[in-house]
Length: 293
Image 1 (cartoon, rainbow, N blue to C red):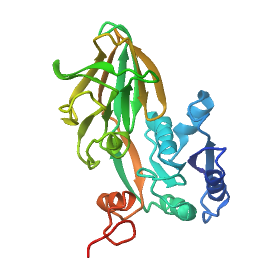
Image 2 (cartoon, rainbow, N blue to C red):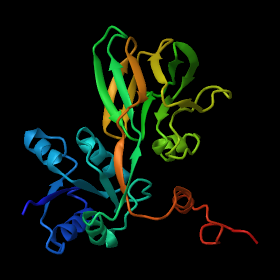
Image 3 (cartoon, rainbow, N blue to C red):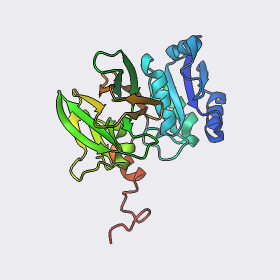
């Protein structure tokens, strides 16, 4: 009998995540031939053998917080592998499964009792020396951030769309996020919450030295270009806690929604609105707030 291949992504040094992975591996799946491949954060993208394992997977399970989920999404993106998240971390907007139900959830997925939806991601091209430069390509599920990095001074940023200037300002940085990323860094910086079904790109300035530069929502077919100006010489490009690279004065950063998203497995019947209200403690039931009298 051909074995069905399932990937498990988790931090090996985190006891709570490793314990869930062990339970999943050792469980009885009713005679189904299941083979598990385990990936730590340090080896999920390493070597041809890992690539063969990723290619063979029917689906993958991320065990941890949203950071682990994003690293797993980065690992499987080339192979179109559906991804399910078990929240053994903190807030968990992406990893919604409960650790105590993880084995039951895997059984449900193996039996075909699940739904699928696609989360958009951002493609980032870093062109060294401007448009004529060779492009380095990166991907993010939540966001890319261009920031001043460890220096204390704000940076001069030029943000253009359709070759027209949208922002020209001094700031600590700017965030370019997907709707999925609207609950992450962008939200902390004052950006809007956006339903994941909305096809768009969200631009959120980080501490702009102006009262008038506000978040901006663009259509999903728009391309954003960002570069340094003024006397700023360098900034840091980061994406989903995975990418972290220096960008210099003559470089150009080009960002757009990627045509291929991440395929996510869902088992929870809770709506997006219910999830947001629960995670952000918006429920007016007296448990996390004053409620309504």
